[in-house]
Length: 604
Image 1 (cartoon, rainbow, N blue to C red):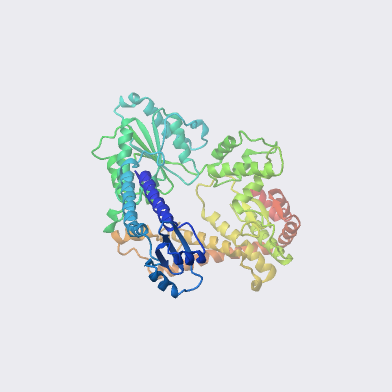
Image 2: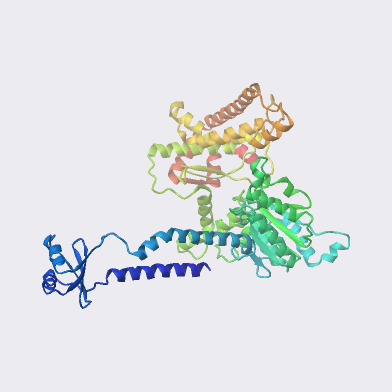
């Protein structure tokens, strides 16, 4: 309908334009003014139209032509009257009747046309495109080739979903004992840990229809469209039951509902209400399993998380050391490797990396090897790519003076020395003064094992190490010449000390009590405890305790560096010479002092 309307409107405008153009060019012959005067003299002219200096003439034999007066001929009118010639005067700017009609009717036609399009769009949004169209969902049956064998790590999560797949394949096995199929499974984990990949594996393993949609696809501009889309989703799923519906990023539609007066009319909240009813209401939706994924479970509505809706919550956390090894093995299967590749070393040097991060690391290494015209990837490409991901690219264009380079070397040497001497600190991995990203240098410490918790002694060792760079500058250049390079170190150290006091109960004066107040705590405690707010007196104690921790560890860092001043100078010289020192180089320098050698032997 829309296409036909556009066609006829366009055709009408073109026809009117052509007709008007033809009407204007009706007097196609043009003669000179002398011939025109001669025709007047010979009494051959019947009618004349005057439009400024333009003259349109009709002869007695109905021949038409036009001419132009070279000057305003005042005597012309008298000549025409004497010869009984009909005279008409026209306005040059006056449009033709067709143009007048077009101008007057165009706004009305355009208004009608826009309203037709608007109404049609609403109808298509509310009926034809509610949920199951190609733009909104993808329906998978047996087209997914990913299986559980292609997923490394998250073994507990895989066991949970394997049970689900087995239930779909053999429901009678579970129904013998009165077991019911779970209605919903919520996968929770940081970005890149494999939630969507696990959902694809479920689709590959199960032989039932699998529907895929994103949470944001439910939310539209018009109120009620999202709720209708949810209803249609379940109606369509009933036809192919048993089946699985996977909703990625469910927090886009499942956020906590507002308590404000106008909040109930929000499109997102209407959609959430409909989803709650469909998941566990009077409707019988047996055989439909909803799997949802989110990295923000704290923002989800409590009604969505209760049993009967999402019966199971699967935590997919960042991979540990063993899982990182398994993930790396999967990603290097099709990549040519050098003999020096050590998967154990790569896994140890990537704590906190998600599965997506590890895939990116291997891919960056392969791209770097191809760029350097190599036939395989080695540990050198792995290390370079890892530094690029963590710290950023090397700033080759940055001009650094000798004094700045020396100051950076002392700063990083201070971090390195203290990190090697303080108790229970993570071993140093590498120190460099090559500028990357926003930093002029960096000292990397890598844990030997994944730390599930951290002690007070370890936290204080971290604070001492963080202040090592600033202390080194103070010892070498004096307090007046300390640079701003320690700003990030101070920020992290202060954050650790603050959490020790208000969050982890490491203050003797305040004891093991929680003094942290975020927005959620304030709202909850305003309702249940009017006397929760921290007094000004407590705030002063908190500040004193934080300063006490910082001061204690700052003094310890200063004492260690003064005692090892010769090592500080040697390490500075080695950094200026080589720019990067690895673990073995650092240990050799540290063992110059026999006392340090004994400490390092005990520590490592």
